[in-house]
Image (cartoon, rainbow, N blue to C red; front, top):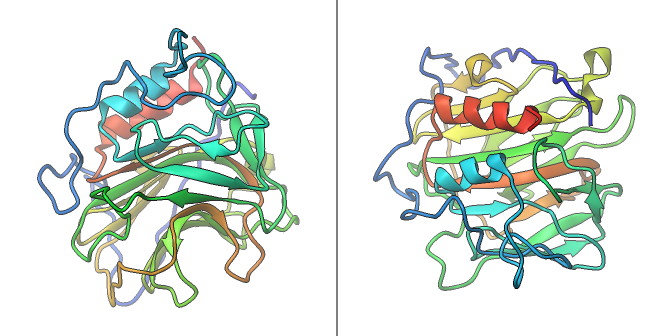
Amino acid sequence: MRSELQLVSVTALVVASACVVDVDRFGPRAAGSTGGAVGSVSSTTSQGGQGGEEGLGGAGGATPACPYADAVMGDEPIAYWRLDEEPPEGVALDEVGMVTGDYRGAQLGGPPLIRGCDGSHATAFSAPEHYIQLQVPDAYEHDFSFPAKASFTVEFWVRLPESGEVGEGIIVGRRGVNDDGWSIDAGPSQNIIFRRGANHVDSQPLDAGGAELLPHHVVATYDGMRMCLGVDSPMAATCLGTVNELDGDTDHPMSIGEDLGVSGFQGVVDEVAIYGGVLGTAEIEDHFMLGTSPF
């Protein structure tokens, strides 16, 4: 894994009638908002185990040191897939303990996209039909559809394919073919796109100087009014201030990677977390620093 990340700036895309970038782009976590974060979750004990090895809840194993995972769990996600499983494991475990996923052709056990975590891995998607189908229990309070005014945050690390290679498609999301629901996509210009209904916020291309081969920290937030997208730095986030024609619901299932008839995302994904509120700028910066700093 490379020792440095290149910070990328993000420019605003004007969608519908208004596009604003606020000083407090992400803001503090919205306590008590619709679809808000679940109660306190321990940051030192994981609920799911790594496939085929001790630790992170594995029977009889000590939890491997991972300051990044501890920080994420301490910020109370409603779901967190570390994607640390190794072959022949076929289930992506949720560290919060509720929403597992079925690997559909994805390549497990690759080098991680974060630093400082013993035994960590990432998952590669090398064909359009590769994805992880997430299974949300009927009894779970979160179905990830997020009603119109519900605040939420999606965070993950990604390595895009090289320039010129096919890789456009959903990285994480619950979105159907009619633009219902939401997703964070790999765009056609080696960029990242946050979609919610018919609205979208785009990052700049990440292919300058081979930067698409670097791991990128992606954070997308929605506070009930604004959509914000930050890549490698919340201070460079772009926000869409007026979200129009919002349709938060969809019958399409939740997934990591997905082919909706375009080409299907092809790249590497790691440490996917979803929060039931807006993750604050300080928290995002802390996660970025922990993910890029050796220990």
